[in-house]
Image 1: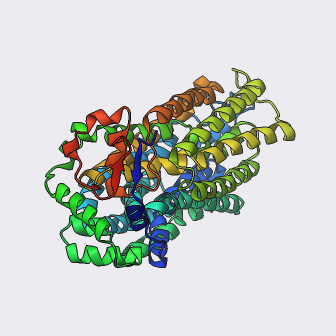
Image 2: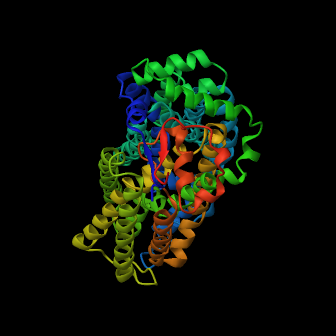
Length: 516
């Protein structure tokens, strides 16, 4: 379903370029923006399962947790105030992504990354020193603003810097850093939970400063992308940067494509109104549905609440954090599978295989939990073997997500938009992602309390829908130069009717239509 578009041999060689050490280092440093997002996802779930943290800030939850074991295992952590703490970050990230869109377009990708790092640093300091719930939530809001700026700019930066044949691999560096952040957070939670005196949660929250500093320093020393330089009127600098990142002076055809895209971008006064035009309908639908579906895989339920979830299904406090460390390791290593295969097998193959594997895992986990707790949720001692089987299938699920919807949920939206609406498109992706992360964080504990083990079947049903959507509506974008992806949409069986021939201003030298 790639749409029947092929590159001519000379253009293919030209556009692929080579992986220069300069590009590799720039992309590694930029990818560190994923650390702040991953660290927060991992740290929050662990901290909210620490007794000392709950006792200080959420005593009603702590009291409920200490109540007799006949209480429903599904409802132990149902608290609106605790949910507000965890999900306030996502509202802030959602709103800040719109401001980040303008900064990214007008002032470049670098400045957005720097603002993201510095704001996250401030939030981590306030959270680590928190003495009341207000300080906790204020810190979370600042963390959210940092994440909004980082998630808006980093995937776009990576997609623009990378040569076409390596774009998937380098962009997934962002998701790899998210998984490393989650894993590091799980290890830190495991260590700080046993600190005597009950102040371990301060260490966990305060150490968010480390990824924030890494990202801020990286943003200061990184070069800006040729696409961004051209968009802001620095034509000569853009050409020199393109030569530098491609490792050759022979970049005229790719540069011509950037010029054409830049000229098109200059005619657009308001990306937000332009993005509603018919010719951008395919990208707009993807920018909304891919992050929407990514959240409805149920991954944040597993990763964000992994310690809580394991504690709920009968693991002890430290055992639940240890189980979260296990899933964190799986998450990191499975992401390497995606890095190794995304530019060879393509985006569609990973989406489809990952969807099938996630569905099977969710059905099995839901069934196992249902058989043990039933609909009443009354506490039942889990045998070591039974609990291990649940953890195993959760790991199978996490692995599938980590090489499919995890990285591709950020990669595909960042590479499909033409330059003139790219910053607006990425903001839509981030805001939709954060909105549904917020909704799921708000309702998950309540849903677990009411839907019980059926929650896993609920997310499994959504996995069926999203996998079918990918099969029918997402064309393959591997190895296609970023400013020429419009040709892939034009050739698609469904999306092609939205794009007129006169809407295409790039790639005439590079492509030939197989139907010609």
